[in-house]
Length: 301
Image (cartoon, rainbow, N blue to C red; front, side):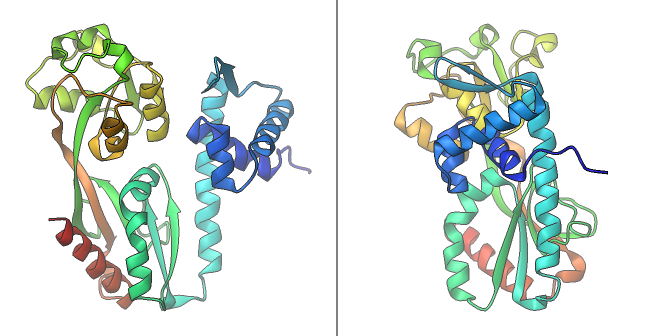
């Protein structure tokens, strides 16, 4: 029976556009023109007979159907990529290192450094896969993963890579350009949430010795987003206040596009760790990457 499926290109374009909430950035990622991405998304919407994006005031947002579909498509593409890499590297053995990481941390912290590793180990081929949930070091056929959590995963050897400090940020216009705003005023603002970090607001408020903004019943209200990039874009657009890792919004804060007027960053109970299955601890390719990455951490002090 013939499957009822849209084209793979339209799904790639939609997933990238949904993640960036920007057709131009999606086009740059996919090495296509902006008009090609827009056309593929329109074709997909026509195929599904549903609007996937809201287009208003030059801003792009996901409809409810679009947000649900984006989550499903992202998961399927992640899975397809992982299975593809398994086949591609089935006979490659010790010359290929399968590295799994979260896309935002990878983009901001790890990928800019990887040139040093490939230069030092030109015989090793790096295969990178990304996901938004913790990786299964056995089932996902991963050699090394950069995980986010408390550092304990069954059967894994872990090494601390980077602590995480979180801070509430928003657009300057939201607070009328004020540099300092009492934390008590947080109850007046919409709270933005990242689905994978439901604890972020509570963790920051508790660390600062503050009550939940607006009371416990209100602490969990506000829109939720699947990806970091979406939350950052929402904060930039003035949709509300988001508690985010400072390392991911450093450029926006330095440029003044975002401000942090409600108080200092706090150290999260969770951090980024390098993790690998204990049975792989002595593999030369894993040892090479572990030693190099721990060297990078030591250099950062």
